[in-house]
Length: 402
View (cartoon, rainbow, N blue to C red):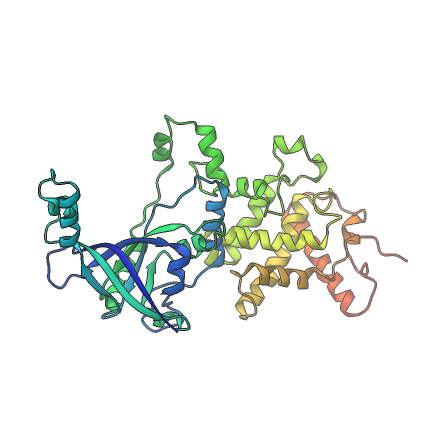
């Protein structure tokens, strides 16, 4: 079924060169845009100019919007219409005549419309048609930059959020690839000193709280840890060993902050693709430990031996090593949280909770040696299970029944 779209906005020629690609700027609802915008991803299409969509990054945008009713994303998205896909019709003359009729005292209404950009700005509409069942790369316009922003905002159920769109008109694929590379190589992170100077005259506590809920790094604050402790979607909510958690949680069940930091370092080291993707790293970590929490509800957040730094770190290494194998063998997409949770359950389902309820023979202090002993015992338990032996046979930490 063919559908027709029409949007009002401004057509801009930023340079005077006749060969320059012009762009049309307009606003539209995220859900509406998602219907007809496609993505030409590098891995799917030759000469593609987008990376793989990572659900964790899109989800981070949705969570940012959900975190506060006043959170907004003023940044535009950049899209591109292939040559001859969209038709522009100028309305500048008609609009200026309308202004004259309603505001006769105004002089030169055209100059007001053009904001001093004569010969380079034109108001009007673009029109195009599309088929709902078209393949992603065949849609009338394709996203050059902002796919996670668009998908995250469109997934916000309560509102159809307006987005500012900058659209390249009659853009060749080479031009689209050029713009993608430029956009993704020019971003500069704001320094901690600049952040501090920006907020100096504001309510810092209130701002910090809002940034934390939105999962945005503020200065030198440990933002990952704040999110993991505070977020309802985190399995470690209110379980980090911070002073205010001791008032609401049994201190013996709290997790040392260094344990979380150590697990994060190990995941980053194992999956280098997550090194510069904090949103996906957090989602991978939370998916892993949601599965653990779901499999051991009587231990998680309750059993001191289970919640020690040594055990958390060792168990994390044991699970991560196996997930890495599945990832390398193309048996797991680490950017799909549900897949990660299911694989973790497959890995740990033969490990009985009684292992952690026993009195271990060694004093548990976090060290490479102790972590290795824990991992060796977990491997031995799996071997015993496969051979239909008593799970305690040959363990270093647990006394074997005679």
